[in-house]
Length: 359
Ligand code: TRP
Image (cartoon, rainbow, N blue to C red):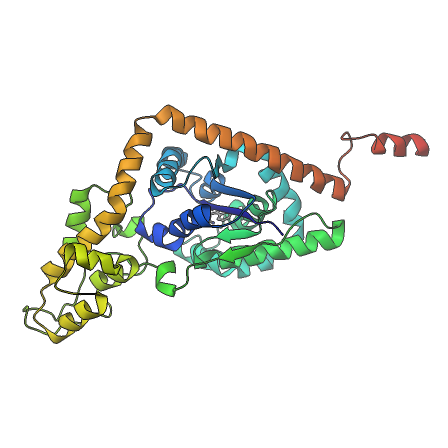
């Protein structure tokens, strides 16, 4: 079966290196290396509203930020259809029919939804729109018959829920929808990059992120205050590598050529770690090295971003065109879905024939 790839992000803030490692890097690799029929990336503004309905301005502002982040990491609008969720009405319509195929209890059991509910302290006042966002996500995926979903590991329950809806739909109404498979990063740490403070996940609200759009000065400042090993006080003290954010980030980004370029005294990351463990290697040396390694990744993004920012009308056209072509595909699936259910009264003559025969 040919591959149809789809992924998306909620526009609730600028994207950071956690997003990059967890999913964006994978998407760019797939875009350039894999064989696929279609590749969609969606700005999930309607889903973002399910827990930001009282702050729509935030969503509106971040739509363009997220699109610029996509373009700056190297997502190529000639290969990938970038579109805005809320501007594809078929998605909302599909959601309404899929809602019949999911119980309230099943939605409450979705582990990602569960942890989000407790995080947001909804208690007993959960908006029903929020509880239903996994159903809407099933629409996002099935509307495009997408079968390959590159996402972070936290999205696995969504794909599972989608596939349950697909099976239920197909068994009741006939084979229309396609099951999907999630592609998640290989290591757990890639799926859950901790913040520069060493705390849980990189998150906007904890102010512990390195954003893809940070300036060189911001990156420097953030790396210099990064959590390392609190017991590594004097340079000569032995240092700990585990739980040390500088080494954790190096593991995510470094390769041997970085050593040749920026730290030729060492051949590779193992030599650097050994020296740190033994003592005699200061935090400033490893932090400066990490700044260079990160800049190798971020500087090309900044350049690309700047060229798109200087052509912002072109960016507007990219998402407008992408949304138009997304609508064509989603409308076609919606037609098939309505036909399968038998609520396609005016799409052809069959309904008219039926009532004429009856009366
Ligand atoms: N739930 C995803 C997130 O929070 C965003 C998303 C919405 C998505 N619809 C999707 C991801 C469809 C993949 C496929 O990051």
